[in-house]
Length: 418
Image 1 (spheres, one colour):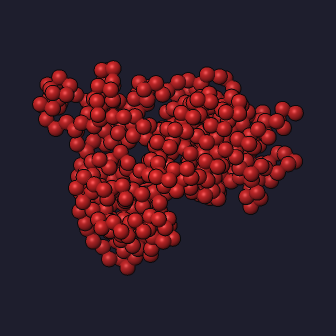
Image 2: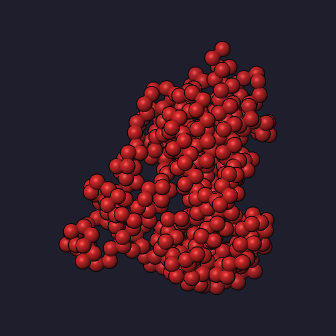
Image 3: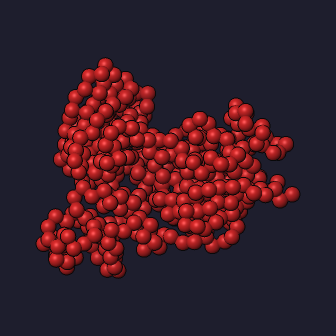
């Protein structure tokens, strides 16, 4: 790797901030080099600065030689040219979220001539972007990393003219005169004639003491693709029994001393694809602990051990170097709480025929026609992917829903123009 042509990230061991930067760059498919700084001589050699205490860590060095000290992710994104303001006052379509569903919608909307914008508050790809390998997505017989798939989709959407607003978050949404008006966290306002919510889900936590204190200091949410190179010879634990957990186990097993999957259920068969079941069973350094959960975490500045509790209440404390939590999540729909969009009790956006199951729908729906498939209780507002009530939690399904949602957007825009 040519250090002069890639981003360099320098920091101290077990830095939460350095991990967040590495993860952000990895998900953005930005080539980078990680350098762990452990002494004053490292500082002199790498940065020509006299000592560890003379710098606010971590430091990010860009290919042009410029540096950012203890930067926020937004500052890094700005330096990389990813942050811009909306080009137009009004759009045909606004898409919220740049996971598989949002990126698919972006490709089809832009290629079909809609003035469309994608708003993403973090890195592209969503939870799928953290997957080390997606093997059951059609067209990739050897599999593809989630971040690479997302980056290809981003490039394709940009080629067709999509506008992508990174590091932006909608904090309040209102529906006025048949349009959605969203206030962004930076104060900007964005108006569109139709919208697609593809905001996905937030990682679910374990709900145990010391979890937030040790987050990104040995404990991580998601498949931890960017952390894999640091796991050589380590004891890695993974909580979860779904495909993302299974792929993470296979990825870490290539370099870790051991990988232990902690699964609450009685078997992996109900939650894991068959091809992964066979591979995990055939990998000697992967162990599966069933009917158990992580109940305690131990460590001062970094995770050192954890307590496992089985269904019978028996506990054991085991040493651990890294713990990755892959147990799904909750939908990111807090922005809709003050609107007439119907959500189920878990916060998922209800669409199409499923709306008839919810009593408030009839009070909210203003049109004679029934909602289109993927349309919420607000005409012209659609949902796609994991955020939608009843969705299939697969990349292919999310991609299909994103494309389908654009078809219904065209119908809605045509009828609203009459």
